[in-house]
Length: 128
Image (cartoon, rainbow, N blue to C red; front, side):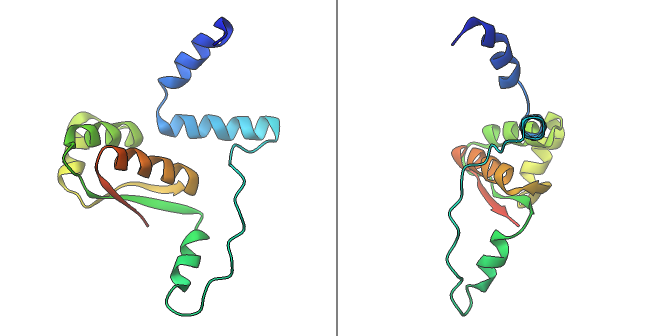
C-alpha cells in the first residue's frame, strides 16, 4: 500500500459501521457514483404464498433483530456496541434480552453487512 494512503486507511478502519455508511453516501454524492454492485433483475414472482418474498425485497429499510446469540456472546456484544454505538452495559443488556431489535431503519446493503458480522460471530439475525 502506498505510504500516502496509510493514515487514511488507518483512520477509516477505526470508524463504526454507521460512520462508514455515511462516508460512502457522501462520496457517492460528491463523485456521482454508486458503491453498490450491479444487481440482476429478479424474475417475476411465482403465484401463491411466495408473494411476500417479493414485497420484502422491495423494502427500503430494515430493522435488525438479534434472534439468537449463539456461543460467542462476547463477540456479539462487541458487534452490538459498534453498530448501535452504545456502552458495554447497554449492549450486554440488549444481547441478554434477545430476541431484540438492535437497529431500526437500516438500508438493505448495510443491513446485509451487519447480518453477516453477526452470523460470523455465531449469532442469528432477522431482517424485518
